[in-house]
Image (cartoon, rainbow, N blue to C red; front, side, top):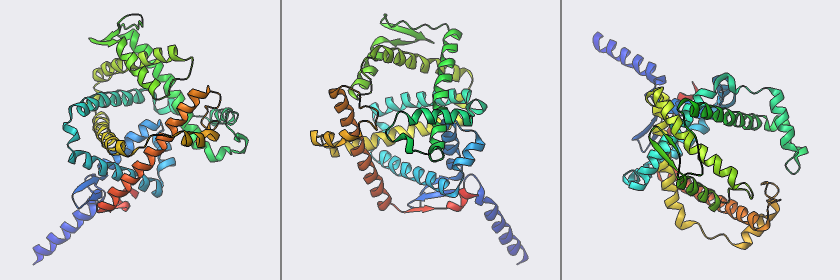
Length: 345
């Protein structure tokens, strides 16, 4: 009897100690699919890296119970869609597999670049934030009515993104010298990186997609062409550097790859669900958006270009509403359990 009593005490003690263990589940779908504390921490750390924030800043900005729960809810929504994508066997679709390989490689090298530019380099002074805020106020309607305190966090993020872009370009230029790579847009093969040829046709295909989506400002096609070429070359250069550094085999590299694969499947599922539901944008819908042209920074564009951009904004709004409906339906159709107290520790 004494042995049984001791066994029970030990079992209860182990159960208590395991509450904060990495394999403890923080969410469960239909009693089966689990999101563990380790899953939560890994995805949150990847998010923190992408934000460019230090660990202290991440805790300061996103460490409240409400913020943690909101992040967990987003993970649950993504998991629900991911499970539907697997049910549809999208992970066996050849086109999707190609997209997965491309997106995973792109994401891993991006996060590798972030690992090089983050940390103390991303500390933004109050003077930098205020200067950016003053510049922003002058470019938007009713800017004078916006208070610095209300948008300070968003301003910091914008300044960090600008800094990271500048530092990313510096890294790419350094890598070009390291691997003796030059870009020549006059040739069919504009560059070769580690035996991989970057073709001019690849650049033109990407530019065509940007034009189709109304994302190239008039008069800037040549600049965009060079940016696109440098982006394609930069990705291949960072693949070489990241593999040479062993980043792909690090815990963060593996997590980024896993999350990127999941994201491709989530996006493909949503696209297939939304496509038949999105109705053609009408002239009346575009007309109703006309008053918001200044807010979106397109009021000075030529009439045809402006309407093209507004049509895209209308379509994005429709897609957002359909996505919200899909997520809401999945939440209602599945049994979801959460242990919010685990992530609050």
